[in-house]
Amino acid sequence: MIKKADIILLILIVAAGLIISFGPLAKEAGGTDVRVTLNGDTYGIYSLFEDQTIEIESDGHRNVIIIEDGTARMESSTCKNQICVDHGRISLIGDSIVCLPNRVVIEIEGKGGDTDVISG
Image (tube, rainbow, N blue to C red; front, top):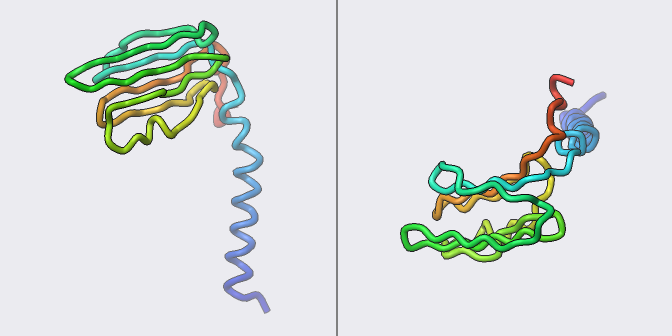
């Protein structure tokens, strides 16, 4: 006799299998550019292959973005929660780091994302 726990276990195993199968396909292409937006407007677009430091100061807030070794990260921020700083490095098309209190967004863009997983 099949129990309720058996059905739940089967659903969890199938869901885990799907996530493992399709997860890497969603972000397979490495990016080429870093788009930084401030208050919803483009602050700048920077090459992911040129090591540099970007300092953003606006309305008494400060964010420091580091681009190095083909990755981007938020080095420091004046926001209280520091989630953006703790996020780590990003490098794949569609990856992003958001500093909500300071309204700064870092997003990886590139030329390899013409086909998405859903439409094939």
